[in-house]
Image (cartoon, rainbow, N blue to C red):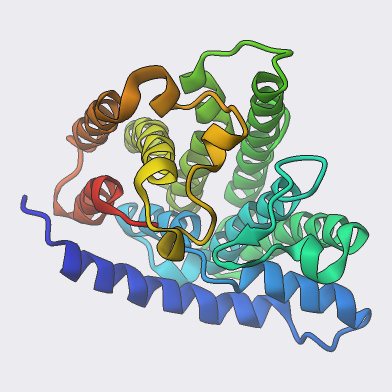
Length: 300
């Protein structure tokens, strides 16, 4: 199948707008008490993210033959978890970043303590939202419980948080980890859980779930590699943060290990692996095929 960047970017934009509208609804009014917390939650979430994780939840549902509307609470919950992780990543004790998507980071606007609590509120609220998916008629409670369990694992000590700890250990020279393992935990686990969540809630068979699992793992790796490439060759106005921050912080990346061309080759290999993992599906997985190709051409 051929890939049209302009057409696919427009399709992504439409899906992002749908997710943004739903996120605004679930976050509630900024004037809720205490207002500074709810203002910070809005600021952290509604700041121009690509919404790839919630989009993947919707795609998992569609591939399973379900409707996107049936899983929108879980889709928004995954974005809240991702947003919380970024708020905490940006803190002085972690990456100490001043900009996120071209805007001052949450702790720069609301203070460090409020940023910590904002992340806590987003994470906690995400699980409340996922539990609420059981209120949708076609969704079974046992499937909601399975999704909550899988997402908890993906976001926890053996997933995203564990990957972040490894990342800090590498940066501080107190640990030495295989970069693909580190990135698989820090980035890939949440992508994988997102795809599986939508599919589980619409009762996709286990063979299909395994195919989506493989796709999520390879996609996460391709996404992280292209992130490393953008850090050295991207446009700061598009990526929303200073170019060259990895080198400045003496971070181990695919660029530092393999050079730009070597990193590009590994990204292409990961995208090819994404394609192969979807062989069990037909046209219903074309969006995911295009999404994998998109990682090779994205500019932010």
